[in-house]
Image (cartoon, rainbow, N blue to C red):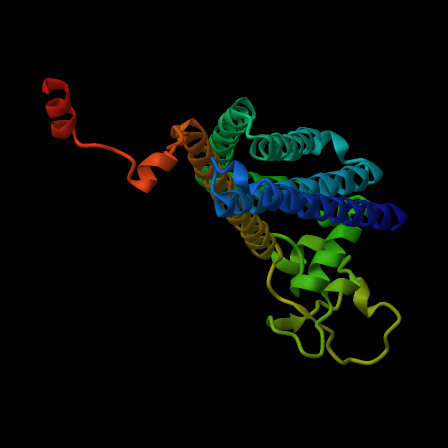
Length: 301
């Protein structure tokens, strides 16, 4: 709990610093707008976009740090270490590229904007590849997830960690067992299978041989959930994956927008807008001149 609070405090501090930098940058741009090669509103839109990218990167970095500590505490770090390293890399790259892009637009440095545009193009292609691969592998991921849970059977011989985890799932999803309902528990049906008063899913009477009837003298039935949990678990996991892919697609579109703005900025910087000054003579304004014909006649005479 303390690590979570520290992580959120760090995120708030970083966001405040980022907003302060944006305000200072806006002030500097308004002061130097007479430099004039790049449109002021184009700069402001670019600053807003890269600020959003930096905020997303900082939030992703904080979430990764929190997830790293959570999985390390539960001793599940070996199964998720590759994904955590990938999230670290994406977060750091987003923040670094946003800083480079900000430096390029503030100082009007073309090399910085080129690095930003190339980096964002590669990042967009990488994220797009991950999204496409994830959507294509969804059926296979569902089958592998199902096989992973089926390896826990029979639940009567499962470890205490698995039993506790399934107990939380059964109470939340209002189900019992994995594949064949309460039969997966044999006679050791846990209390998490008991039907709630306002249960959404259907219930059935528990068998008399189950441990739920131990110490009871009345003949009233004990109602437990009838449906198994595995379909609900797979549906929940697939829904989470689809939501994550949708968020990644939104972030990818933001990166693409930053690429377009960066290219426009580069084109504006390459445009030659310097024109030679026009000097008007005071004599010409006063009309102090003679016609060519008169000058020719004077010379002839």
